[in-house]
Structure formats: structure tokens, C-alpha cells
Length: 320
Image (cartoon, rainbow, N blue to C red; front, side):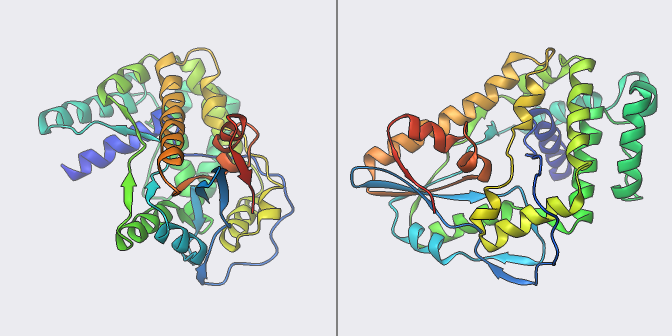
């Protein structure tokens, strides 16, 4: 049952394009990160009057050599009345019968139609690019050839970052939650609720042209220089805000969904998740003297991110 649930979660993550990726523009890294404890970036402060919200910028992939430890975040959490979870979507709790039905649907939608291989469904030039990345990064025991392009791209991305020595940044979010529990601070779930069955049916309506376009864009993120990917992760680990500010932060999720052929409901999920978090952030700012939250670094540094939207709504913003 747990395996089925993990398969479902991974597929829904692929459909919702929740694996954040970026385009890099910086100089190559010239030294590795030594194992040890690292703080990540300093905190951003949002305020109105004497009410404040401290925000920590997370990263989807971080160096596996590091253990996150931020005294600034610990102090801010301990002094807060509430901690906001990161924005995102959360599927409703599933009963066993629902889970089985969805798992079967996931298996059906994950595979190419009529049992075809990727080489049979993709244009030759796109498959050649995919093959080059597969040969470089894919683990030998894993085959993605019978998977739909969007699923294959996500799995190649996972293989690639593992090869680069990066791991999921979810442990940072877990560390924030542990700190809040130790300090007996209320944790508010800001996730946008979604119906997994509806999400899957919307995914089934995605046109092949739209999926191929997104596949192309996801491959392009991996075709960037590996050193640049690592540089961004290392800059985040040591908290080098100046270096982090030199990167570009496009939103590939919305770039993909902007292509004709994606159901409006999928874009609505992304917008709903952002709007839900903003609603909770404004509520907390009004109710609490001090609140703490964590959001993806892109949301703090991009001109259209959540921090920019708070600034537009009249809140004072102080960058570190």
C-alpha cells in the first residue's frame, strides 16, 4: 500500500510540475562544499507596523554533504507565534478503495499509448537529446523508455541531481517543523487542497504537443553546465545572497502550462496554491506580532514572486 501511495504521489508531482527547475547564469564553481553544517541564506523581513513575518528561502535540491543548521531561523521560530508551511498543493486523504483505483489509473496514464517506447512517440531530434541525458545520468537499473515524456523527464531529472551530489531540500522543511514543535509554536498548513481524481483526469486531457513542449523545456534545464547547477546549491548552503541574486529564476511550471493544450484546472492549482499562502500570510501578519515562514527562494528573488506580491500590497520588505 505504501508503495502504491508513493507511486501516486510521484505521478501527481509530475503532473503538477512541482519539481522546481531554473535557468542558471553564473560563473562555474571552482571548489566543492566541505561536509558540515550550513545555515542557508539569511532571513527576509516583511512587516506592517509592529507586526512582522520572517521568511526563509528554501531550495528544491541541496548539496548532500551539508546538514542544515540556521541559528537565525531557530531564533525567529522560537520568537514566533505561528509558523506557516510552504505553499503547495495537498491531495485529500484517500480511502484504501480510492487509493487502489487511483493507483491503477496512474499506471495507465504513466505509460505511452499502445505500449509504445519514447523513441516511437518523440520527434527524432528531441529523443536524441533525451538519449544523451539518459546515457549520462540514468541509473542502469531504471528504464524510462515506456513512460510518458513528462514522467521520463522527471525521472531523468531526479537521476541527474543525484549524480551531481544533490539531494532533496525537503529535510530543511522538516527541520523547520521540528524547531517549531520544540518551541511549541503553532504550525499552520497553507497547502491548497486538491482532488487527486480530478487532477488525474485533467492530466489525461493534456495534448501530446503540450507534453512534448514541456518535455523539451525540462530537458533544456539539464543541458545547462553542471557546474552552474552545483554553484547555485553551494551558494544557497553558505548563504551567499549576492551570488544567489545573480541567478535568473523563471518559473518552468508556468512556462509549461502557458503552452496551449494544458487544462485550465492545472494552472488553477498553481494559482490557488499561491493565493492560499498569501491569504494565510496576510492573516498571520494581522493577527501575530511575529510569524515565520519558508518559501522557495524563487519566490523571494523574482520580480513576480510571492514577496513582490506582498510588497505590492503595501507591506514593507527588508532583504538581508
